[in-house]
Length: 93
Image (tube, rainbow, N blue to C red; front, side, top):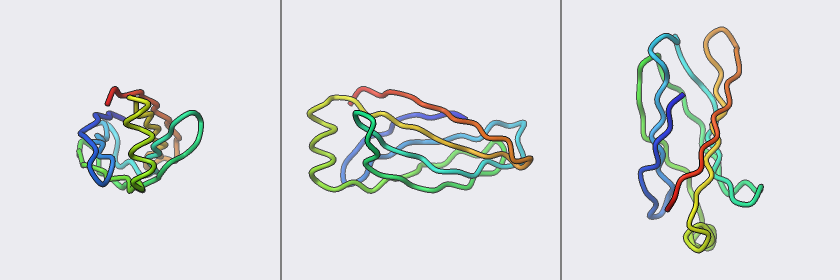
């Protein structure tokens, strides 16, 4: 599971990529700060597919992230066989 931070305006944008050797990847993307979930978005990708996933955030939540200077993204994905994969990354804003 690949993740790349793509910016934040009214939403936090993260590009997700499902590996080529998987049939599909479905799951949820969480935006977190200090252990608290700020937002969540669902995704459904086919193998080798890449998509921009937007997580809606309130103005106060975006302000908290900007002040902190970091965005903590956690993707929980399930492949076609039902195996669970968790990917956690910290991005500088």
